[in-house]
Length: 303
Image (cartoon, rainbow, N blue to C red):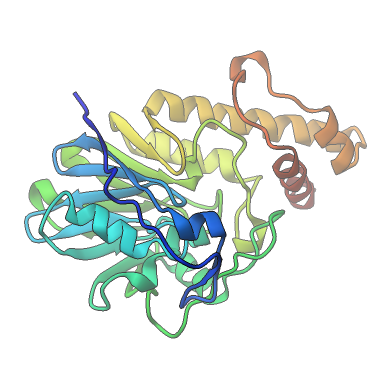
C-alpha cells in the first residue's frame, strides 16, 4: 500500500514579495512566501513530489538519487530539502521530460556536477526557452551551461543497471518535440511528463515543436511498446495504462472532430466554440484558452 507523506516541515518563509532568481525568472509573492512539497511513495525507493510545478519523481538508487524534472524556477532547493528528508544519498542524476519552465526551472539550483539527461530536441529548446503556444513567455532563461543537459539522445537511453535500471524513450512529437517517457522496469512504473499531464486537453505547444496532429499517434506508439502498472503523470494523480489508452482515444477524438470542422469550412474560432468532448470523456478538463490555441495549431497542420 502506498503511504502519503506530507512533509509539513518543508515550509519556507521569505521576506520579499518578489524574488528574482538566477535564471531570470520572477516568483510571485505567494510563491516566495511559502513553498510546500507533498511526497507520495509510489514504490519502495520511488516517490512523487508534488507542488511548485510539474510532478517530480525521486528514485533512490544504490549510489545516489535520480530526479525526474525540477519544477518552476526557485524551487530547486526546496526539492533538494524534500529529497534529504527521504535519504542521505546525494542527488547524482536529473532527467528532464521536456523543456517547459515548470519542469526545468529548478535545474540551475541543483549541484553543478550532476548528470542531466534530456532529449536532444529539449536541449535545443532550453537554449531558446520560447513562449508556450497560447500562454505567453516562459519567463526563464539559462545562464551559460548551468542546469543544461550534459547528455542527450535521439530514441533511447539507459541509466544504471539491474533493479536500478532506468530506461528513457522518445516516440515522437506530442506536447513538445522532445517529450520522453521515463520507465523504471523493476518497479513497473513510468513517468509520462506532460505528454500525459492528466485527464485534460493537453497543451500542444507548436512553438516548442509540439504537434496536435501527431499527438494521438505518438501516444499509441507508447502504448504499443511499453506495459507498466503505474504512470506518474505530469501534473495529476498516479494513473494506469488503461488511463493512458483512454487519454489517447480522447486526443484522437479531438483530432477527428477538428479535421471534420475544418473540412466543413469552419474557422478555428468556430470549431473551438462548438466542440465538447463526448460522454465517454466526461470530467476531462478543457480550458477555453487552451482549446482555442490547440485548434489553431491543428488547423495550421491540417491540409
